[in-house]
Length: 314
Ligand code: ATP
Figure 1 (cartoon, rainbow, N blue to C red):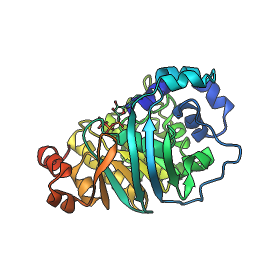
Figure 2: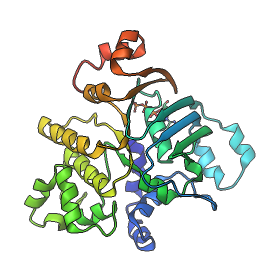
Figure 3: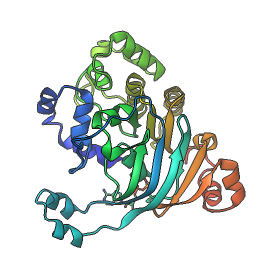
Figure 4: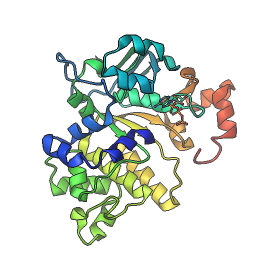
């Protein structure tokens, strides 16, 4: 998911214009996160508030080639056909029921990140459909999709602004009390309180620099302010010190409680707790089930478990 945030950095100079042109924080992400061609349909309908079900129906996906992206604006459809990328998802079927946690595991390049990106519509499927709360995400209003699905990645972006401003992107109009509540839930309140300017501390490259674990906890605070019913989580593989690590884990446990979660899982503790584990290999689900059953089945999961999952962090 790192590549999602490349464009954010590249666009940091135009951010001021974007900010002044748009009312809500989420709209900034709408502009910056989505690939060209992702737009709201004129007849788009909102996803019902509080929806927690995710469904993948025979989902296929191939990345647009570089040519396709530039040619798309020229509407040169015949040229598009000549530059087909390989399919990276070749027919995924699964459902995450409201409140469930589903873990995506599998070898590098199997398609875990790609799968997670299709839920928040960073990209659109090239076959089949993804439904959130029973609505095909391509038919949903972007605002309702942003309100329903929250994303926590390994490197959440902080704007060069105050902590309060960064938090208000998640909930415009949040009161200081609500922000402190979220920071407390995310196990980062004590640190912010100790800063000379507290919530008004400017962060980012030229401001106060948070560590990786602290940034993750700020991303969790945003999630707690936003209260989405679905969370897409890319678990950290970055090496945090054990204190940070424990704080992030506690904060996440709080943030995920009662929500639907689709987790790119790297930790054995998460995988063991999952209601369902989906084992991906080369863009398809090759095994699914709970930890004990998959270990007993003696397939790919069992061998990943033997070779990679024995440590606390994989
Ligand atoms: P990892 O565990 O290493 O993060 P993953 O299971 O999340 O891997 P994906 O990142 O979803 O796998 O990648 C699936 C496939 O899609 C890989 O073959 C990858 O090279 C390819 N891929 C990923 N991003 C792009 C892109 N922007 N353009 C073209 N191909 C891509």
